[in-house]
Length: 172
Image (cartoon, rainbow, N blue to C red; front, side, top):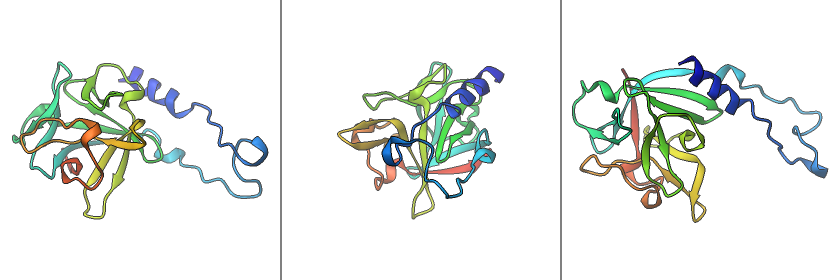
């Protein structure tokens, strides 16, 4: 757990150039830069309940799918904020991170990496969507989603408005 937090801290503290005017980095001069440090490392224990009536689960082999059972221990997830609007989702009992590969496949990664960073967004209907922060398909975001049978959707086939990608975070 401590090693995972250190790895998350490395991702958060990575220097980033904002590419301001004249190639300067660091943001606009004379303006107050907001600090979101209080959000970093925020951890929430949740179950993600899909619009399709499945709980998202990550098993011990890294397989991602949905279950109808509300008592499944593999559906308890730890959602950790990595950056503003960016989270990492880890299966509490499986010790795997939810990840989206470059090809849009959902899987559980043993180690935290770039595939594991997800953009969290609250939609108009109150559900949350999770898109890969790293990968895109033809300039479109790839989302975490479950079909009507609880099987993971390929990220290339998903869209923000598709209800198969909508999840309700429920207290575990």
